[in-house]
Length: 446
Image (cartoon, rainbow, N blue to C red; front, side):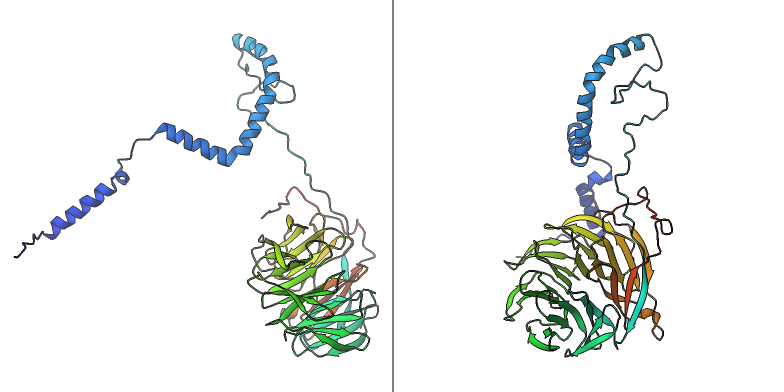
């Protein structure tokens, strides 16, 4: 049995398809459905409440407060209205005074609020007074010993050098790493120097014999940063394998492996109070860690670019972080955001703070900025001079630290030198005034 297939012309099929499309989308052809005014009013009310709830609440509150004095004025206003005066409506200003309304005159509802931003403390500018040469590669890290007599630097030439702080003379060179040395720390309670590097090694040096006495094995890639806990014998290291590892200093046991970051951890710091460990990573996040549990307490995602440095304030319960977008200050223990420090338009590699509230930041382009910690005022910008024989591109600052007194600033740089800065004794508030303009300063909070 054969079925007859009805064939239509192309024009007929095309017409039917157009008609079907027209019927389906007829609303978009101008025949819109009728507007339900009640639905529209509800929609506008919901939007207004969602966007302006705080403003609406304040308006209602101010209206309720103004209602009482307004009653007393209503009779006088009614009398003047009957008299046919043009300026009959007398707006209530909130202070009990009646101001006649003038035609085409804007009435200021609230006085301009005075700036509540405090004026920054005056700090003497810093000046370069010593350049130390001796390394054969980029100088990547620096640490000052607790007694403030010497400091140590680690370099891409695989050597750790110990220098006298007062004279800048070389005391000893320590060899043992087989790749660039990236982190150094001196213990306050033991004669130990700890170092880490791109060779995945973490070493403990006995400074009485200048020899390595312990190795801490476990990292799967380069180790970029290390920190010593101030009160317990614990060492924290972090690096390119996206983990921070907590070591028992004496037994070399890997107590915790702090996982959670998704990219290189560039900086790790430790303090006695909570959070005892903070890490900054190239994944644009800062993590606060519970050292006892080995777990993350909080993750701060405010930065938009990779974080290369974090530092604790020596006396305040705060810390700062550095990223190419800006520097940020935070409050412990929960990592509450305080303020942005903007103006350092470069990759910031390092931070340091002294007890006087001077925050120093060093960048890849050789710029050194000094900030007032409390207000975020950038009171000085320095450009590190490149040493003869070096290229301008070798002007990056990789690490910096204040000495134990806070009166000397030591920087390590890409031109293979160590530079030491001190405060300018001849400077005064008159010769270096504070250019503080809070009216044009805008703080971006995000």
